[in-house]
Image 1 (cartoon, helix red, strand yellow):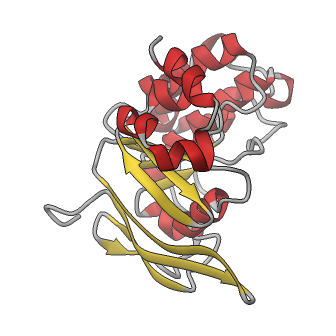
Image 2 (cartoon, rainbow, N blue to C red):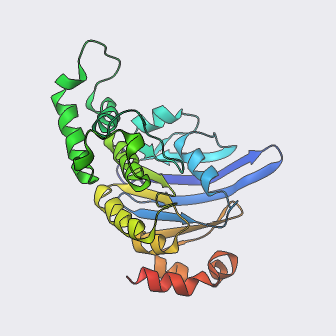
Length: 260
């Protein structure tokens, strides 16, 4: 990591599928420890942007820099090992493993347990202790031995976040983490996200404006593959172009929700 670099930086990032340009010259600089919400209408390119950052897609042109290091063309697992981890819209956990076992799987590589077949997992004290810590952090300690498939939807999402942060990544990408949750579940989940990402850099794609304005330090508004605005929540609320392009009649509701 180079002194003075951003945690994550996108430079004139572009992605085309055939003749169709989906991401059109995105520039974004995220400081370490910032919480950034990426919003925009359906089809704006938000998921494509996440796929470019996390290595699922390779840019047509432009650069993605993680702590100043160019990560274009690297595979997702290589990017993960450099300190960036991602969750998905569809919950991505091991359904037939317990809560504890899922979390232990998530911490093994970061603790130095790579390709070894000579040790029993039960004997890895540091991995077991870290999994226990994560379990308490995501408030699933009372579900320690419950199979992931038997958790509620909100609990499965919490477990996925636990696995996501378990690898020790400094930059976390969450793709619509509260989708499908009730208002009460969403409110609790915002608090959980804040707690588990303390000291980390967070980017989240989110459609719920209450979540966006309640969680983000800054908001990036993506419309037709371009960043229309990138600023603190109050400035984005007041941005006339953003209101016309995306927020529209939801601005008043977002102001009320963001105040709580």
